[in-house]
Image (cartoon, rainbow, N blue to C red; front, top):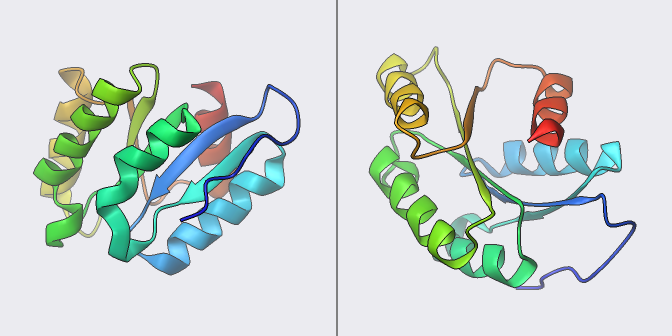
Length: 139
């Protein structure tokens, strides 16, 4: 797995995307790259165990993970990965993305994780790309 080396200015935020849906991951990566404010790296869906490694290797400023009912994207697993990343890259912001319409229970769990400080931010999948990129840039 190739970790990108320095590009552009210092204001470009390094973000790791750990998103199960490859189509969504690629779309988010393109949208983030297109702003000129981010350097995204996608974790391959078959290599989610490499998420912490990528965050550490890039000194990621943001880790964006989706939460879903699949075993790899389950809430407990995502929080566990977040703790591991925080142990290796304490300054990395943990951000979760979930579909509040498809699974209100997961949406509630994500909101509670934010309330108790286990994550830095969360977004529902129904937000626009423009809003998501602006909010991530503001972190």
